[in-house]
Amino acid sequence: MKCIFGPVPSRRLGMSLGVDLIPYKTCSYDCVYCELGKTTHKTILRKEYISRDVILKQLEDYLPLLDTPPDYITISGSGEPTLNAQLGAIIRNIKSITTIPVAVLTNSSLFFMDEAKKDLLEADLVLPSLDAVSANVFKFINRPDPLLAIDEVISGLINFRNEFTGQIWLEILFCRSFNDDYAEVERMRETIKNINPDKIQLNTVVRPAPEDFVVPLNGIQLHSIKERLGTVAEIIATAIPKRGGTHFVNNEDNIVNLIARRPCTMEDMSIALELHPNEIFKYLSKLEKEKRIHHKLHNRRMYYQVVGL
Image 1: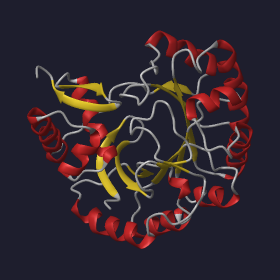
Image 2: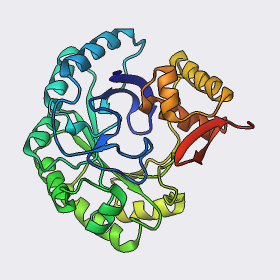
Image 3: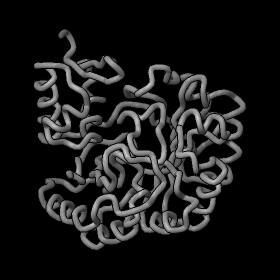
Image 4: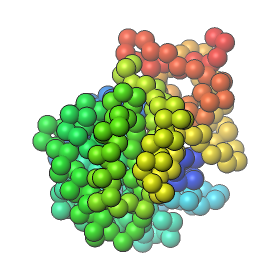
C-alpha cells in the first residue's frame, strides 16, 4: 500500500505531504459529504491497521526525493487516522527524522479515548472537525459508529484543548438546510467557546458528495455564519492555492489524458496512475475549477470526463 502522497496544495496547509495510516474508507463516520465516497468499514476499534515500520520506511525513502520541503507533513488520508493505535509513535518517529512540522487531520470522534488523545498531543498542529453539536444533526450528517455520542465527542475536544500546547484549527463543514439554521449555529457558537480553538475554519461542499441531497452554502451564507462565530473564524471554502512544479502539472495532464479516453472514477484513476486517492482529489478539484473536466453520477458512482466529450 502506498502510504505517502504529495506534496499537494492544500487550502489550509500550503504544500502538504500526506501520510495515510488507515486502509481506504476505514472510518468511525460515514459523512454524507465525504469526497472519498461511502465508508466501507465503520469502526471505533483502534489497532495497527498499517504497520508503523512500513509507513516510516516509505517516508524515509520519499523525503530525499523532494526538491522543496513541504510546509507540513500531514497525517490524514483515506480514513480516520486516530484509529491507528501507533499514531503517537509514528509522530515521534517522524519528528526524529525531519524538522518539518506534523499536522493531523481528524474527525474528532476518538478524543474521548485517553490513548488517542495522548497520541495526538505529539503533533504540532491538530485540525479536528465538528459539523454538529445536536445529536440528531450529528447522526444525520456524520452517520457515526453506533457507539459514538456527540456529547462525548465535544467533551473530548474540550479536554484535549486543556492539555494540548500546539495550535487547534477547528473545521466546520456546512450542508445547506441541515446544520446551518440559526439555532444550530448558536449552539455551535456556545460549544466552540468551551473548545477555544485558535482558528474556526468554515467550509462547505466543494467537491462531489456521495449523496445527491447534499448542497453547499453560498458565499453570503458562509459570511453571515462567520460574523456570528467571531474574529477567529475564517472561510476556507475557496480555491486551492497554486504552486509551481512539474510534479503537479504532469499529474494533471496524466489525469486529463486518461479520462479523455473514457470516463473514470477516482478509484480507477488512483489505480491507473498509482496515486493516492487524496492526491487524485486535489488534482480533480483544480481541474474542475479550471473547467477542464466535469463529473457525473451514474449508478451511484462518480465519474469524471473531459469537458466537451
